[in-house]
Length: 163
Image: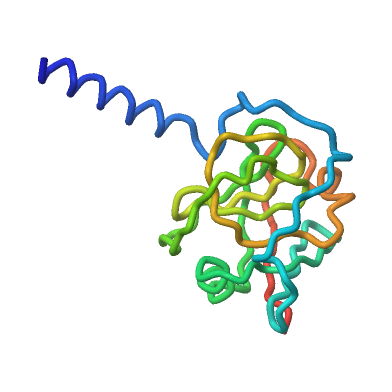
């Protein structure tokens, strides 16, 4: 019995590792759905962000939480982000950030989230999810985000804190 339990736990752990930042089983929902207001994104002086992809820049609002504060301390940074599931780009940070993960229910275009404690995820499609994330922030106007990111990996995505 102990051997079977050990194998089950081992296989479960390996399955979770292989899923990456977000599995492709989440259904896409309408982009016209109205986002639920997020108190973590109430405007606070000094919590603005610029994300630059090629020659296109987006401004955003960082969340009012310890995770976003720790992320802001890492800026500026330019990273290569990998494609996942046709709805997100992700990058693994070299160190862990504090987390307070919860299930948002619906991911919105322009959401910037942390999966686990070190995986920064920028979402360019709206869809429902059963996974938990810690909010880092949200882009103010992400209407051209998907076109700017394109398909596949993106070699230079710059994150800058706006003072």
